[in-house]
Length: 134
Image (spheres, rainbow, N blue to C red):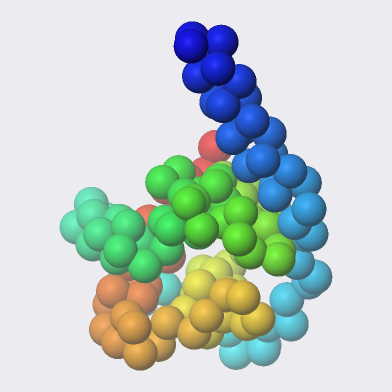
């Protein structure tokens, strides 16, 4: 019986791993110039980071995971890998670029302007994303 349980756990892990292997890296984003220059109007303080975390946990973690590694429970169902927010490549983006990717979206990354209608909350998510930096 114990051997069977181990077999089932290994099988589940392999299935999950195979989904990850099949995912492609999404192509480069075309971000409008106005977003590239955009600055976060919110102070990057404890209150905004906490608010950003609450919004992230509600809207983002299902795909992007608890720690921004792109390993949320819905991630395996996506055609493209949702990204690693801890990476230097991701963290090198300006706040405006992260805003565009996170709030405006494209393809599998939905638009969140209506789901997160408060501009303060939208920018708070960007502050929270910065906490994933390695």
